[in-house]
Length: 107
Image 1: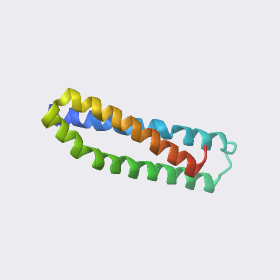
Image 2 (image 1 turned 30 degrees about the vertical axis):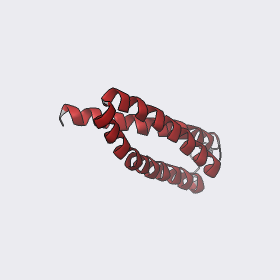
Image 3 (image 1 turned 180 degrees about the vertical axis):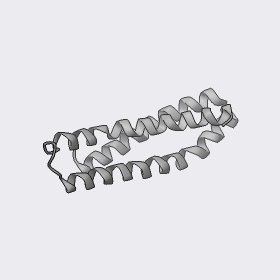
Image 4 (image 1 turned 135 degrees about the vertical axis):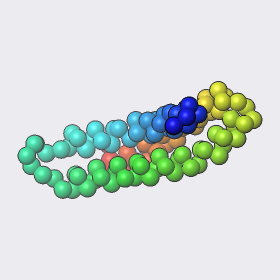
């Protein structure tokens, strides 16, 4: 992988991290409600799998939404400016997506 691909992967990794961090309260709520070790709770496992699957879908969707604008900004405004925009846009999307997931799955 060349250096430019590593930089792009790192930026998109930041987007993933922001989205995941906003969804962490959901996982924490599920962990607090977890039964004692040794007792299975298929419902909780299904909920956690649903949260993880939705989180993956959301991150991929956000990447598809942000990429064209990010690339345009790199061309027109330069990489540092585009990177700042991406951090801000990803953080805001992560907050909204996290709130939506907490509303859907409980906190």
